[in-house]
Length: 224
Image: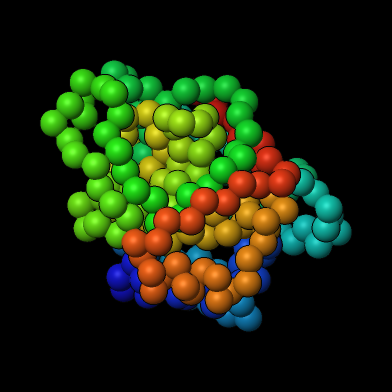
């Protein structure tokens, strides 16, 4: 399943953005096969033979519980919570020792869909060139979720084999379909929801960069 097919499946499952059911399989394959039952993203075991991680049961009794994110650098995991309940868990790649992911409490205020990429002013990127939205060589896949603007963000990657390791230059890498699901969820809870057609247009016009500023910033904590 390619990136576009995955994203179409996620957009069609609009209820998944607020569903309490969550799962993420671990492994080295870096492939994801989401399936739906009544609009809820179901557990898959696409990443090898590791057991699927599941979130706690329903939180419908907490409809106004705020959305919060916590990334654990040591666990290489991102936890999405509402109230006291974890509703999503995602494998991430974190920064290396030379380019560590910053730790602390931050606020997500900006999301960029179909992002372009410009080499940062850093030694590792001195021979790199800018890439436009939709460029196959653009390392930023699908969406960038800024937590420390302008240098640090969660973003989709085609290097899915790196998830679960320390491999980035400080950002948090995610599988493309999962970062799309997360961005949609953040927009809904951040006061900037969109209709499904808005997301579908992004898939058809991959060179059209879209910036979204949240009315209600979402908290994210990054721990060691």
